Length: 265
Ligand code: IPD
Ligand code: CA
Ligand code: CA
Ligand code: CA
Image (cartoon, rainbow, N blue to C red; front, side, top):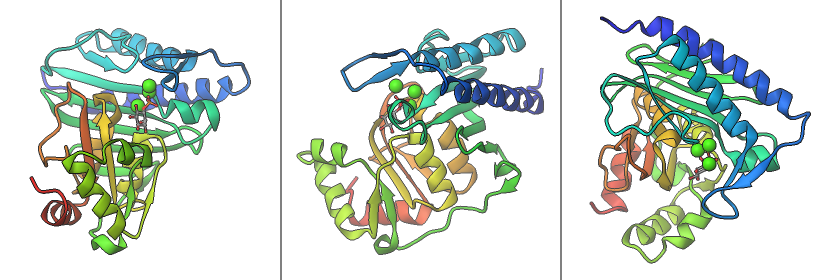
């Protein structure tokens, strides 16, 4: 049977609205904050509640769909056959806890490994970036134009200083330091989904992260590619949707310049 993407899109948008209401309401109550891999790897009751909300709704409405979520409420998946929702219920949990802004909900929906629907939701500003394969990208009702190329010396690049310092001894680290010296400026926002949306809208010209998980890039990859941009690892290879990876997000021209002049493959 043919997949009804309009139906999936309609439900995804409804659930995103509801999830937003829950998150905004949570600002009035006390969060339960715990840590995961280390003392700075935060998770809250809302990360779990929002993922649970999506998982319950998807299982009721689309029982044959698979789910991969950061908080592991869906079960682990080992292959990408069929329809798979890749969900980050709150991307930028540290910002959510400390700033109550600069965090997104991120969802990518794939069929047999091919991106079909991508959502990056700026909850606080109520701005939903959504891309549908072959139909372009919108922010709320406004269509977003394709990503423009800029020369390196005019580029603003999203990159974390912490990552740059930690990786300075590797080959890639040295190349990235040279790149950072040549670009117009760097920024670090602490939410991969936000940074993908900024590349989509030209607020950033590139975003580089040393290690992202599938739920950090699944939604953004669909949106960037739909706008003619490129998402690869730091060797220029396609990302594996089941594995963590370094990630480079740019326009196609900038991607070429970065590999030609800085990162030697
Ligand atoms: C994190 C954010 C951050 C990135 C980290 C991610 P989380 O996601 O996207 O910007 O640098 O690698 O883990 O844990 O807040 O959903
Ligand atoms: Ca996390
Ligand atoms: Ca994340
Ligand atoms: Ca998260």
